[in-house]
Each structure stands twice: as C-alpha cells, then as structure tokens.
Amino acid sequence: MHRFAHLADVHLGAHREPALANLELQIFDATMKKCVELGVDFVLVCGDLFHVGIPDLEVVDAALKSMIAVKTQGIPIYAVYGSHDYTPNGTSVIDILSTAGVLTNVFKPSFEGGALRLGVTVDDKTGAKIAGISARKIGLESRYFEALDRASLEREQGFKVFAFHSGLTELKPDHLSAMDTVDAELLPKGFGYYAGGHIHERGEYSLPGMENIVFPGPLFTGYGKDLEATAKGERRGLYVVEFDARVTGKTFVPMDSFGGIFREYDLGGLNAPEAGAKILEDVKGLDVAGRLVVIRAHGELAGGKPSEVGLAHVKATLSGRGAIHVYINRSGLSSREQTGPVFSGEEPASIEKKLLELEAAKVQVGDEHLRGQSGAAVGMELLRLWRQPPKLGEAKKDYVARMVREGIHALTRVEQK
Ligand SMILES: [Mn+2]
Image 1 (tube, rainbow, N blue to C red):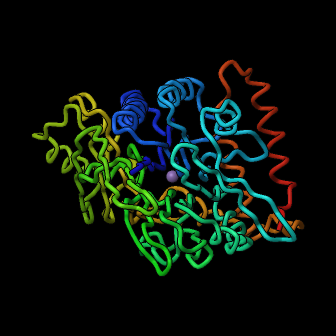
Image 2: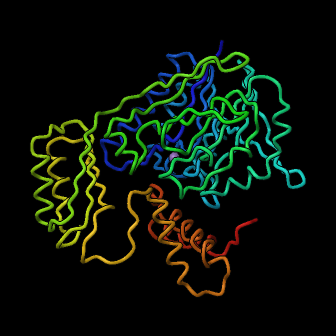
Image 3: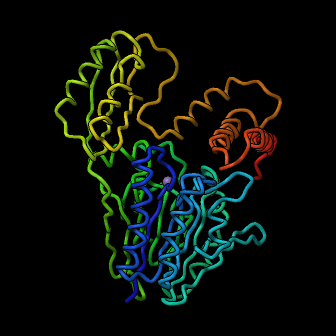
C-alpha cells in the first residue's frame, strides 16, 4: 500500500499582517513535516502554492526550506500551477522551483493538430501515473480542456491521478455561480483520483466515470471570504490518499492554526455613530487574545457613510486586546447617501471583474480587444500586473519602467485564440 498527500491553494505570501504571515509559513512548514511523519510516497500540490507569481523572496526562502526538508527524505513534490502562480509574460517562482528540481511540474502539454496531448509523469517509487493541467489566467485553461485528447490518457494502464486547478461546472455551489468552471465531461474518465484545487471549500465528490474527486480547500486560510469561514470553525488541511491499484482510503488531515470568532451585525436603520457604538458594545466582553476575529457588517445606514462607522477603531481596539488578526467585511453595508454599484458577499476577483465589465461597456475605443468582456479581461490583467510589489532592491524608476513596459505589453497583446 502506498500513500500520497494532496494539497492546494496554499497562497503563501497572501497575508501582509506579520502574525498571519508568520502563521501561514509555519503551517506550511508543519504540513511538510506532517508529510514526512505520515510517510507519504509523494506530495501533490494542485495550484496556488504562492499567492502571486513573484512573491517576496523571504516567503520563497522559507517555503523552499520546508520543501527541501521533504525532498531530502526522498519524497518528491509534484505540482500543477494555479491561477495565482501565473505571471503574465514572465517566469514565476514555481518555474524557478521546478528548474531547481525542488518540485516537478506535471503539466506536460504538447499540441498535435489542435489536440492537446498530456505527458504522464510516473512516480518512480509507487508507479503512480500523474497527468494534469495547470491554470493560466482566469478561465483560460478551459481552452486546454476543450482541446484535451482524453482517449490517450484513458488508455494508460495502472493507478492514475489527474491534477487540475479549476472548478467543475457540475459541482459548482450557487454562491460561486459567477466563477468560470470546466465541464466535467472534458476530463478523462476512469482515473483513480481527481486531485483538484482552486475551489476554496473542502469537498469530496464523484461523477459518472469519475470517482474520488477531491478539493482540499485552502491549506491555511486563504484570504477574504476564507477568513470568515475559518473564523466560523471551518478546518483547513490536506488529504492523505492510500492506494494500491486503486484508492483504498482518503483522509482529511487538519492543520489547525488558530481559533476564530465570527460576529455579524445588521446595522440597517442606524446612523453611522450608532452603528459603531453597537459593535463596540458587543465586542466588549469577547476574549480575542490569540484569535482571528472576523466581523461582517451589513444593512443600509439611515445616516452617514459606511466609512464613518468607525470600523478602523473597532479593529484597533480588538488588535490592542491581542487578536492575531481582525478582518472586517463591510461589503454588505450601504448608506442611503451612497451611490454607485455594490456587489456584496463575493470574492474580490469577481467583484473587480464585474466592475470592470460595467466600466468597459461604457468605453469607446477603436481596438476591439479593449471593449466589452475582452476589455474587462485586459483590465483584470493590468490589475494583476500592477499588484506586483517592487522586487527587493529594485529602484523605483526601474520598477515604474517595468510596470509601464509590462502594462503596454498587456494592453497591446491580442489574446491568442
Ligand atoms: Mn486559490
């Protein structure tokens, strides 16, 4: 009997607050140690190992140490790329780790007459065959799936794992209805295990011809909405899968990092100062030391703006009492005085996409690819590019020049069909 570890959506470098940033790296390190302790034969990371394609070198260094400790035990690490690992027009840190032999990229595409052939990676020790498709930028990988030569993969004998970083349409929860997904019929059938990533919600599924479809959810806690789920008690971790000729068992292994407190406030009908007072009163007796606090405020204020509720003060108060992190979601909070579009309770990326689509529809430009949906996609690309911080030691003028150069490239490039 063999076993492997399946994890995804680690998002190393997602957190800027020192406490969370440290915990994030600690949990990753503990996870790598856990893999050794459990005696797994290999580790499979299904995308979004890092939060951005070019993270801070400090984060890379820490992650590298954790992974090398696994490698030196003779445990290989296989990976496909996630949407966050992708760097427009460039080399991402995952490419570097792959070149250095710290991990093996199992996405081995070749195109033959319009069909996508996937190379299969055979794990030496167990003979397990791994094939997979990396995500590119949002939604683009669906073209890979459409072109995929499934028959050749289905003909492969032995224990097979299919790794991917995409939601499946058939399994899409209602609240993610805006998310781009891939139809399960486009995946090869009859694999022993379908190792997913991208969906930040743990789930085990089966579909016709596809047993053991697993999304482990974020290893740490991801960001935004994930923090809320963690605060409500959702456990984070990895899967350990046992197999011989087929899967004989799969177990979720939690990697607990911290406890959380979740508070929700309906502030409808109050004015801004009343709303602030209500929250402060409620959190007065809470023991927040060493815990994650997530507050969700919603409703339509009778007077004042959401920015006048004093949420920054609430945050400072709770941080002062030892909360490791305070996250306040006020996307459902509106005001009678407020105008403009509001998209509540969604992932930042999908809100950005909707806003850009709304704005792109108003823009009159000659270039076809800067209008409508495609214009919004270019906008997303620019946002993504310009979120990259300067590299350590990079002079401001070099950084600006690089951003301008990459921005122009993104603006002028017509997406290949
Ligand atoms: Mn992710």
